[in-house]
Every structure is written in structure tokens, then in C-alpha cells.
Image (cartoon, rainbow, N blue to C red):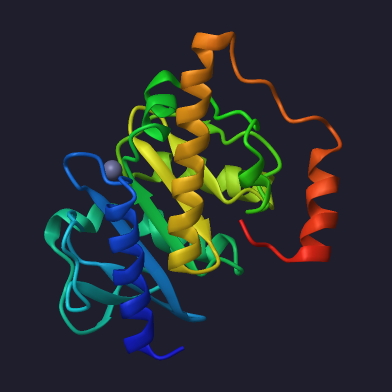
Length: 221
Ligand SMILES: [Zn+2]
């Protein structure tokens, strides 16, 4: 895909995240998208509230700047949180990290987000979203825990980092942003349902049934 188009897709996804309330008050987030087999395009700074196509850097999968403007120094520590996900799973086309307001509640509580919300099935989520243990952001310990989950749960498109926030990895920036928003809906509903006795898990056969209907009717959410 052309670099110009990849840059625009990331900006569109950032605006979608902002419009859907997925940026907490600090508007902190980082986004990246695959450019080709060995390169990604990634946000250069930590705030994406008013992202433009110039606010992005092109890196190789070792995190080395390929061309154009460099990353902000504060962003260096999170680069491998993106690059190693692309290395670990070849199908990933985009990675998004935010402090989405309801997902982050589960992250600080060290609780997995349960599988109670059917729209998540449409993104291929068929198990609870786990929390990886806290370690400094972007450190080998933190990224190593994320990569372990990715390798041990081949279909899982998201994790939470304890006491921090969310990381989703999906086909492209827009669908990754939609997945993040849907996951935040699931988290919000799960919290609200506590007032009514708690959310109930989807029945065992739900995953297969939704897959069949998606095959018949498409994946419209
Ligand atoms: Zn963060």
C-alpha cells in the first residue's frame, strides 16, 4: 500500500478514536500501521487528539527510522511494543495503544474483560481479553508478556497492560479503532451490569453460531 494512504488511514483511525471517546483526558495514545513486510508507519508523539499525516514516522521492524522525521525522544520507549507485535504475528496490519476509559478500569483492577457482548465475536474475539503483568512501558518484560499472549492465543486481537491501558492489533487502522471502541463498550457494559447482578457469559454455542451467520450475511456489525 502507498505510504500516503497508510498515513491517511492512521489519521482517520485517530480521529475515530477521538470522536468515540477512546482517548482518556490526556489524549495519550500511539498508533501504527504496516507499510510493507519490513516497515511500519507510527505516530511520532504521545498525544493524538489533533493528529495530521505529518505527525508520523516510518520505521523498520527493528524500530530504526527509515526516512522522514524522527520520533519524539519520549516515544522511543514504546516502539518495540509495536514492532515486536508485527514480528510475532504476520497478519497484523495495525497496532493501537490507548487508555480507553472503561478498558482501563479492568486494567487497573487486573481483571480480564469477559466474553459477554456479542459484537466482540464479530471481530473474532472468542475468549476473555487478558491482562499482562505490570512492567515499565515498552520494557522487555512488558513486551515479552504481550508477545507470550499473542503466541499462546493465536486468534486474540487485544490485551490489557496491568495498571496502564489497552493494546489492540488487527487488520488495519480503522478496524482496529472499531475493535477498541467495541471492547470499551463491552467493558462499560460489564461494569454497569454489576448493579443488576453481573453480566452473563455468552452461551457455549454462540461463537459457532455467529461464525455461521457472518459467513451467510457478511461481517456487518
Ligand atoms: Zn499508555
